[in-house]
Amino acid sequence: MEFINDVMTYTFLQRALVTSIVVGMICGVIGSFIILRGMALMGDAISHAVLPGVAISYMLGINYFYGAVVTGVLTAIGIGAISQNSRIKSDSSIGLVFSAAFALGIILITLAKSATDLTQILFGNVLSVPASDMWLTIIIGGLVLLAVFVFYKELLISSFDETMSAAYGLKTRFIHYGIMVLLTLVTVASLQTVGVILVVSMLITPASTAYLLTNRLSTMIMLAGFFGAMSSIIGLYISFVYNLPSGPVIALATTTIFVVVFLFSPKQGVFSRKLRVLKQRAALGK
Image (tube, rainbow, N blue to C red; front, side, top):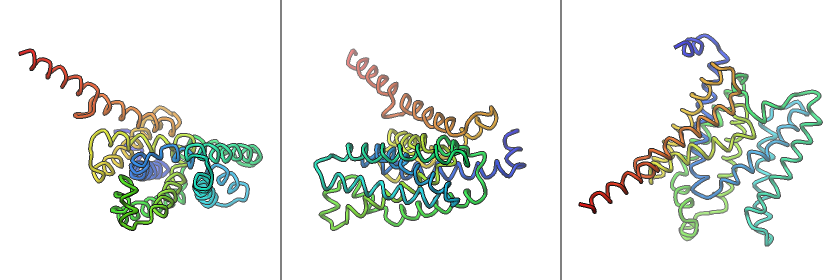
């Protein structure tokens, strides 16, 4: 109850709550496509590769959004160029580009640290989100959700069967890079909330939790968005009440929800499966 009163009283807490909910929702939505397409490593790569762009933006005195989006898109293009024009496989090209980009980002942070502390970009600090970043996150969230809604059928077909989608005449490579752009936007929107290091947890864990509960993509997307938003609210509450860093707490909240579903999901839960086996054995014993 005290937390609700504080939310009604303090503007910074209202901004943090709105930003967290939006980030949790869009991370869950895009994360659903990421895990279905087997691109979890790509999500990790993009989230780390935006670091040089963020550092350069701080050094130039401009909004980190611009630098992060540019480096994120260039990373996706670079990974695709290496894997498509050489014998290097996709996972190896991801490792090559993402490690180089992250290393460059660390060096740039070292150079920029005398003027600006970028620690919150690494680990997130949603309680210090300014109004401009909150509105930027809302705009990005709206664009991402609109894109998923408009191109839902194309995303559905290409996520489950890329060969069939190509046979239907869909531009699979264009769809792939479109998802990379959306992933980059979501990553940039998540920087203030969970940071570069932990954004992959928001992308993967809520969607993985939803995947254990349904076989329908539409339901999975809604559940993933719900779990992401709920994790953000729970994490924000705990971090504010107990004065803990918001990013790690939100990441642990997503993991806790996953563990509960992993153990007790009606169809896929560990305990549920064991209970069904025991019932089958008991029935056979009769």
